[in-house]
Figure 1 (cartoon, rainbow, N blue to C red):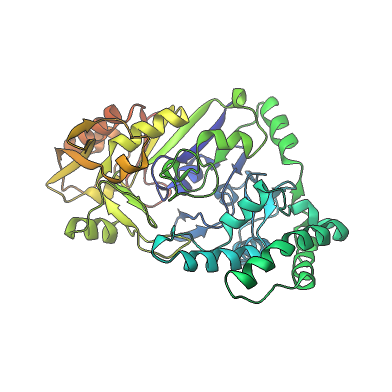
Figure 2: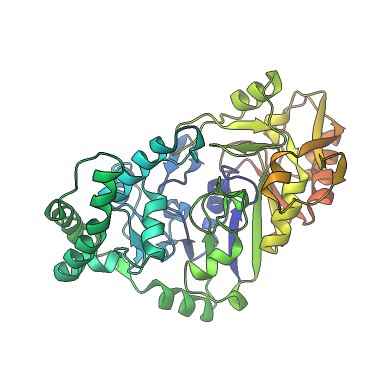
Length: 427
């Protein structure tokens, strides 16, 4: 049985929650492998809509074990609040497992995130201000605090003291902010020990054993390929690796155990926050996509920037992730356009470029080269098979598949759980 990675193939917000939820009933484990509560998934089940920020989407699938891997940074207050909210709605959250090696987002991480972003002014990155970047920075600097540290007060206090020795100097001398008290942070963090104790496990051992025993494990990335700290549009990126390689480092499962890598593509393109966006529309079409598509960030609450489909980005995602399949979402949003432009290449300094430029400068100056495809006006939300789609919708999907470099194996034709056309099985 397979181990699969499911990730965003654009700048995030592609509909990974819907795709994960579609597979959730067929898999044994759904694992978040990176990011924190800066990611958001919306899953619609019947007439119920669930907005998940930190929890794996599999938590909504009975019989599936949701796992937060070691590559995730965890804000314990947010996690417990999210669990409580689901419990109140009758969702069973008791099967959740959290890696003891996952790092914690502390109060001083969120404080530093907000003040440093304000300090940057017009040069700001556009972070969510939730402490994600500072928590990952502490992890790399080896002064981070892990989930397992909650259960040893002596170690916890030593680590908080070491972190605040430096951070209080920065807060006071650079940002003119009040120093943060060690005792206050330690007391708050210790308060999370009991509520979280039943969830903590050696998830690396558990997941490897599960795969070896033939169980199905789905690795779920947050954000998207173009927000990857190594392979995205740096510096306008997240602080971790949403690309497929991050599934290995973020869970402790080796690459030879992964069978398929599924990229989620929106039928157009969106982006939240600052950074280059070649196909961005600042006109009526952009506003129409935003309105019909409900393009507002699940976690941030910010309007998403909208643009036409970018095949250059899709090809890049196929390459750096080794994608085996695509899940195309929100095709229904394009219903009603007479003609639909698709970016097939860029013009940079007068030259046609068909692959994503490695140079930040070149990408900032990239202008989209469009091919225009015929649109459709028929309602497609009730379509159950590919053949039930209007001919022009079929041609649009086929064109995107050919341009993107991997087969489109599923198509989202509406927001509902059952509004999906399955062309090829992922399992």
